[in-house]
Structures are given as C-alpha cells and as structure tokens.
Image (cartoon, rainbow, N blue to C red; front, side, top):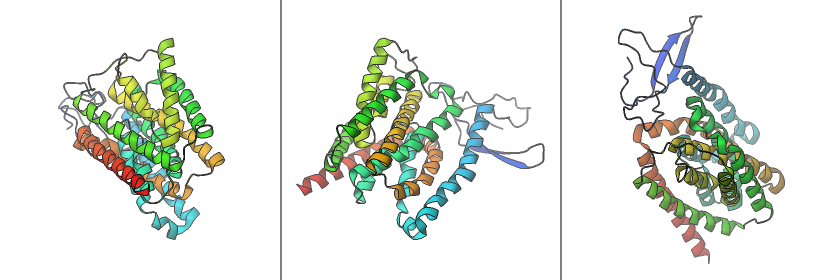
Length: 350
C-alpha cells in the first residue's frame, strides 16, 4: 500500500511484463508542488484500499527509464573513457575528480540555483590547476550536468519546471556577453581568483537572506513584454560576462529576477530554469575554450563525467531526506571557506 500522506522515501516496485521478465522500476513519489498543504504529490494516483498495486503514471515511468538508461548504459561508458584514452595509471591519480563531480552536481540536480563551478573552481585551484583552466573545466562539466541532466530529469517529472518564455532571450544575450568577455575583456588568473572569492561572499549573503525569507509561496506567471525582454536581455548579458570570467553567475542573476518583483515565479521552476540557462551558455563557452583558447583540461574532465551522473541521481534524494535548508547551511559554510582560502592565498603572495 502507498500512503497518500507526506512525501515518502523512494520505493521499489517489481512487476512482470507480458513476457514474464522482471522489470525493476524505481518510482519516486516526489512532492512536486511545494505549496500543497496536504503534502500529497500531484504525480501520485489515488487508489482505494481494495485495489492492487498502483500503476505509475506515464511521466514518472519515463523518468524511471531515464534513470535506468543513465545507470546501466551511460555511466559504464563514461566510466571507461578515461581508462581508454589516458590509461589506468594516470586515471587512478585523479581519483578525487569524480568525487568533486558528485558533490558539484548534487546542488543543481537537487533544485538549488547554483552551478557546479562553485565547487570545481576552488577545489581545482587548491590542487594546483590554473584558475582559467578551472573555469574552462567548469564550463565543460556544466554543459552536461546543468545543460542536460538537470533540466531533462525535472522536465520529465514536471513540464512546468522550465520557464520557456525567457529561454531564448536569456541564452542569446548570455552567450553574447560570455563571448565578449572571453575575447575582448579576458582576466588574468589572479584576478579570476579574487573575483570568484568576492562572488562567493555575495552569494553566501544572498543564500542566508533566502533562508530567513520564505520564497516557497511564490507561484506567479512570467509574462514577457518589451520592458521585461529588455531587463532579462541586459541582465543575462552581464551574467554571461561574469560566467565567462568565473564559470558561474548568470544562474544566480536569473534566479533573483524570477523570484522577485514583478513575477515572483515558483521557486523550483526558477531554480531549474536558471540552472538550464547556465548549462546552455556553458556549452558555447566550452567550445570556445576548447578550440580557441585551448585550455580545457580534458583528462580531468573525462574523469569527472561519471560523477556527474551519480550526482544527478543523489541531489533529489538528499534534498528529500535531509531537507533543502540543511543542504544550504552546509553550502554557506563551503562558500565562506572558499572565500577565506582564496583571499588568504592571494594576500600571502603579495
């Protein structure tokens, strides 16, 4: 029996198809509507006490098949790539990269408006990677983690998760700003580090503000008139420049715009949309870094790809089990630690 009360932990249903083969379907009874007072998931079918096991609806089943494909097809392929191209000796030395990728993709896949670069860049700098190469690596991973896995999984569960009205304007303006910053206004590695540290401080302040100001009651519609198009285009252009410099930025700009006046859009829809945009902007930044700047650390990137798959599965589970507030408290501590370490490193070098 499946309870129609508050959201539950994931359950497993086993059933036989028409050929008699056992099919394992991992069904998430996900609480998609945060504002529902009863706590009942809109994806959950009400069943009477006399009925048999509930049949999952179509969109949950599609999500299940995606999880199975990622787990048993995509993950083994990505896991084998670094061993094939770089050998097992060099791959083993980068054992920590998949762990970083898991942690980095937990936040956006769990619905937080934070791209993986917030984890990758300081961690790679600590291991001796050049700051600009760390930004290139961040764009390469966000292209997949934020641009593919996160929006695809959420869209299968809830088509409204992506606010399509702003996508074209924000992506075009964001790519333009990103390319302008990379070609005309590039930053040296030391400036990138200091810029990133300052951004972490501002982001920590905003996250703390959000923890004490409930945004879950937002559920406004996004209407794109000429004024809003100009606002989103300008903001995305600036956000794209920041993303080119430090690997992140446009997702936070869009999240603030969507959840504030006049739209006050749904917090989860705002998160998923902003994460998707930074992933799609990172797609263009990655190819520019790869072919024009030639500074993408391909070996490290290949080692991190399987971690992105695992992180995309773990993010929703962690938010479901421990709650988003506890995750965000840990995130604030990480931001402050990153800022302190980078500021201290640069001050010692003076």
